[in-house]
Image 1 (cartoon, rainbow, N blue to C red):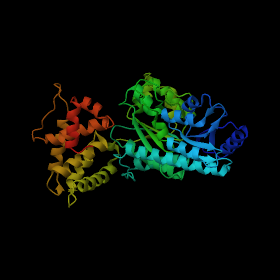
Image 2 (cartoon, one colour):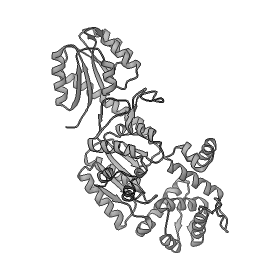
Image 3 (cartoon, rainbow, N blue to C red):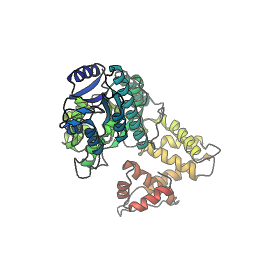
Image 4 (cartoon, rainbow, N blue to C red):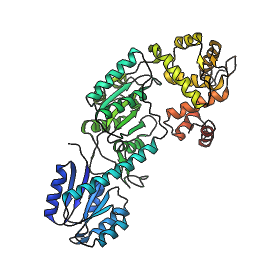
Length: 462
């Protein structure tokens, strides 16, 4: 039975506690109980329930005082007051203080179930809004573009994994091959098989965040658990509950975190920093890397047990030079995409000779290189038909301008180059590599944060 969430029931009537807790457990809730007010707030902090069912009149202390403490400490739990007051005036006053709802005794168990379901659904919607704001800049492509046998084989494997509801997948491949796109495809198929509606897809780059910050991002923390923990924060594993989490560049994760991740994969529970209890999660974990993890294991840089746990269901995305059948479909897609984005009335096309050059190129930067090249051609070339001379100039400019000399400078091609295009491309690469962390991207480019902000605004890369 799927876990519906944690409920903390506080009432000094032992019969109510026994009856209601049993009924809630029978329908899938994880229930903790107490019959006294002492230490309730600290228990709520430690156990992290979704809802606290709190009797207004407790032996030795008012439930209103407990509610005030929960509100004061900004605990994420929603509080439902239980009252024997027929007028419900006290409970209404409690709602003004911050309670989510109230239930009047004697109550029907079905009434409690409905109240809980409504509150948990509202909380889920709030989390979805938070998540959607976090990833609003992400583009979810519905289909994978590619007709090569390699792509069809990967899609077939993903479909089989979705049928089996696989919970952990490792995707490897060179930078720019489309690993994230296959991860999103796997996420969508797996959740479709489970017949679930909205399912979050949360991404974190394991290479760009410091170890301490990455642990907090993944697992969350409680207020006051470390110096900068000014409020409770749910980790990405919890935000991804009911969906998927993408651990990008997992080969660069610090070993101390690798052990904690292994525990999460084995037990399907996370413990926020500073919390005393673990939180169960239902999330598909998809890890991607361009590192040879088997080699990293041999060198002692990656845990062998984590490698075997991840490698049980494994996908390798071949480089574009090994998927020649995909080059022209991808080219056509990006011609349409960037043409529409540039408000061009007529779609550009490649001459047959230019198309042959596209297929003959080795594409060391894979799909990312092809995408950037097509964008430049769409924006900068005035002709509607792209000829070999346009393509040769662009490919030469791209490879020469981005090839560093021993002096650390860049080679200017004989035909010249658009400095603005190169500048935009480098800024976009830095943003992608830093997972759009502007501070980190500025460091990669060795410019100030304010300069980067200006350039991002200039090139509309927000």
